[in-house]
Length: 410
Image (cartoon, rainbow, N blue to C red; front, side, top):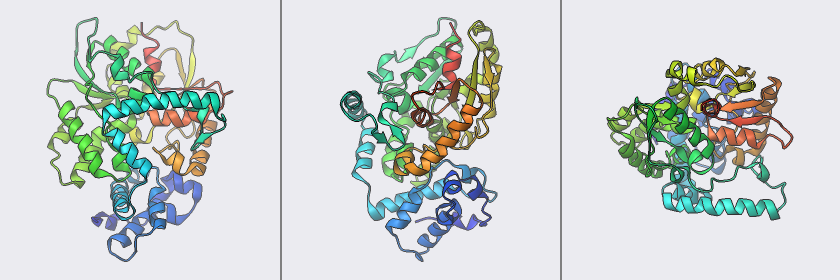
């Protein structure tokens, strides 16, 4: 196992203060500093592989806070990803994860699985105890799957009514394609009103981040190369993404995974320069968009949760706050912990529900303290976790920022 970068760690502990898991458990062995040292000893054959070591490495949200704040430039996320891959070699994978990875690399089977899951979700709500939880989220609070994948609902190319400013490719991600069709519709609507031709490649596949963050680099590599072949095109203005996690994958992590696999990264690096989060892209054209907004709509108070993969991996935060603050019918209120992790972390909310619950309850409490009607966030995973942990009586809605803009456009 390659682990030379562990020697960059100065053991200063700054990463501990930024780690949402450590701040909850206050256990040195489960913070990022200790993980780095454990990996060092494992790589140097001073520490044997064990289920306890596997558990410690798994108890991480992969939020990137430690990497973003490390004064020594240590890439904790890459190191932890590599260690998780080693743990798969040592202990194998749960059959559930192998099944999920299979679906994420076989689009037709994933489509069928989501149809079955939609039916099963409906049956469960009718016939089973409504108190059943998936991790921290009650079954009744889980969103239903789209009736059909979003990419099947729209044309592959959607032309604007006005003169075209150019073509953008839309990477929909799994969240929008299978669960949050409302986000996809909002993205297309806003881009068309700005005058852009939107092309949605129908054969795109999962970005691969769920696989490589859990350590399965080989499965992820196949998806990465397939997507690069689809999206690396010279005739486009941008590749827009509505998911913070997918954006981090396309913009940064694909390059790192290919480097880990000793693969050529030239195409991934070229593509990464064209990738933009939809809110970042719209912010760049807001002067054209502002005159189109309906200013007679009722005023809403909005607060914002900054997704870790948008903030840490892509450096996008102030742009979205400025965008929200510029909308005339929105009163923007910053939450006290708007820029901390929500505790979802992919499957973390299922694997470590007690820790996840404590983290997300603080987020929701602080969001409510702003008096906001709407909690905006640019990550479907964060939306799932935040909305899922609200109660039935909570009036607050969780939406993507692009939906707020779309709702104001004719």
